[in-house]
Amino acid sequence: MSKQSFSALSLMWRGLSRHRGWQQQWRKPKPKPRYDAIIVGGGGHGLGAAYYLAKEHGFNDIAVLEKGWIGGGNTGRNTTIIRSNYLFNESAALYDHSLKMWENLSQVLNYNLMFSPRGVMMLAHTIHDIQVIKRHVHANRCNGVDNEWLEPAEAKAFCPPLNIENNIRYPVLGAALQRRGGTARHDAVAWGYARAADELGVDIIENCEVTGIRRDVSGAVEGVETTRGYIQSRKIGVSAAGHSSVVLKLAGVRLPLESFPLQALVSEPVKPVFPCVVMSNTIHAYISQSDKGELVIGAGTDAYTSYTQRGALHINMHTLDAICELFPAFRRLRMLRNWGGIVDVTPDRSPIIAKTPVPGLYVNCGWGTGGFKATPGSAHLFAWTIARDEPHPINAPFTIERFRDGVLIDEAAAAAVAH
Amino acid sequence: MLLIPCPYCGERPEIEFTHGGEAHLIRPAPPAAVDEETWSQFLYMRTNLKGAYAERWRHARGCGKFFNALRDTTTDHFIAIYKAGEPKPA
Image 1: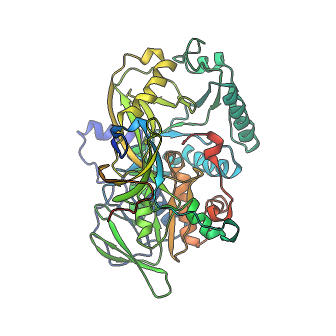
Image 2 (image 1 turned 90 degrees about the horizontal axis):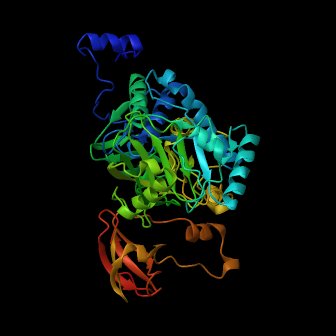
């Protein structure tokens, strides 16, 4: 299928010609009996992995199996924040690899991802916060990741709605700012990768749930049972987010994961009032404004494991309490809708992009509450790992065995919250 | 918010409780004789089941006691509540 190329001129031309002639952006193929590689999970990470397998590793017979519709899981449910200011060397390398890919991804995919490096500001509210955040700033700069310390007045200048008075329960004592961080249009990431992968011959098969993994006598994978029949393949990459434990269990692999509902909500749309992304780990506020004008607010995870894609209201209220203190102007805004996604959380809050003990079976999981920012980098490294049957140096530390060997990448302790 | 039936106090709102993770994980012993694989299974690997999941709760802002629950993780409905030390209901 020849790809319709998007440009300002082509968009204007379609507009003037009554929007006739738009083409379907990816096919709806029936599953073939066998593929060289199968990716389970049609979110940004999975579609991206299929794209890079085809583009960079010469695979021309790949299927992406999605049990629902593409981008309908966490890719379409997150708060679209992109940053790379993680503490440890391994994490900084991983997330900055991704951030660098975001910077020209719209051009690479010929799809407007609306990547907007508007700056991500993380607030400090206590002396301990100041020490931890300054440590992050220094560690990031040693790793070549931009991050800078702002005094409260500078933070206010960067984000005018911010309340820096000292009459609130947790006054703002300073902030760290990563200027290269920002947001992107989450749906466009799934659609852009789907369209680009489809053009390289990848079969994107929706409404196709994996119900079994078949293995040969040596223990290696030989195919998957699905709701649309048996499909043979010697390489299977699982990129199933909150359902990773469920899929890997089909091959008898246990993972260090627990799945929790994570909620987000948006306000009614308003004119542009909020120029950046603001996060506060201490009092739990995550906020930015979408191009539609809605304030996009990230809430926390529920206390219990669940697969329900919904959570309790008190979790949202907790975040709104913090938002209303930090940004008093938003107190009378109405909230438009809220939703949940199921996130797979590892004990150290770092992901797993690795081979599994089963030959031919690979897993990309454990992104927990912060996988969107990593989409291009994660997909790129996962494709490398599947194609070469060995990890790229950047994802080599992110194994399942790190829990056995005691080499955790403990971003949980570094940030003291899920992130 | 869940309404959680504490076996000692009756139904109470979820904010009175803390979640204690997967139930029936048995600490391997003696510690010095346990290999790394067994430790990592106990410390980190979880069943993370989609369906009837046995889990621990603690009525932290109530009676303070631990108990176990069987909850359907696809609906969040409690199937059974039982005291710590009792076997998992069939």
